[in-house]
Image (cartoon, rainbow, N blue to C red; front, side, top):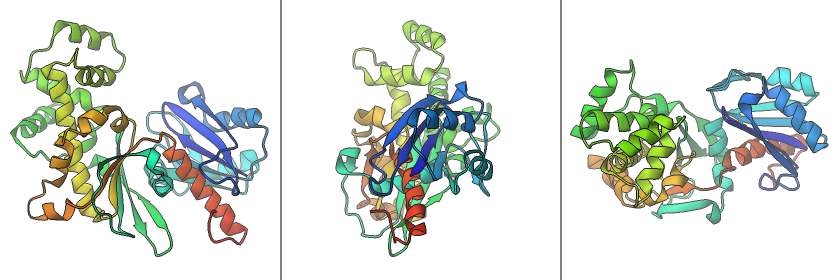
Length: 338
């Protein structure tokens, strides 16, 4: 049996899987608040005590770069070492995947009920697949077909330079350059990016900030849900919050299109992360697809590319599980997980 996990700065989701049941059917699972623990080992120890199931191997998707079997978690003081975990829990092997690599690995396992289609398009069989995931930060990854199955590739594309597409975005770039040394797509297209867009629109007098909204934001530990919830509520929406969300959606669409061109994602583009499922109405207005396809002479290349939102919050866990179960299957002389 396999211990798999989706390890993030806010929560750690662990589960036990078997080759027979597959990556969509955990035998036991539990979620833990990451900041309450000093290390991944302490979380695993508590989980295994609850599960009372013997595990032979482990596979973790982690919110941070993975280099030579080691990783540090973004927004969490954890250092994860695959070798150390192997020794601590007497495991045969431990796989560490970047969280977007883990999400990408899980994409081929998704079913129709796990997805919301924004544009059906005409996917090319075996074509590359791109994943862009705005959550707390902005993650990007892609999949390529090797003739037998899809292989996931991690990137740090969310940290590339933000490129404005109109005067409003150009002025926002100038505004943010005065505040940050480097303005990346993550700084304008993520949970941390939404407040930056809002601050620019407020300070540039795009619209006045209502006093009731200023009070809500001042009282909130995280301004992003306040901005999004008000923008989506017809009774509370104001020009400042709706303008913030509209600009966010346009930037997300443009960067999704950039990623699709760079990877030639004829197999489709998938929007993951925590934000897209929460803003489906804003994604379905047509603003995202317009920005996605607005690529000049190459616009026609993206016209048939499917665009879908990942609704299943366990896709990263499934991806980590599939990677670990595949290793077990190969070890046992089987070509792949059933």
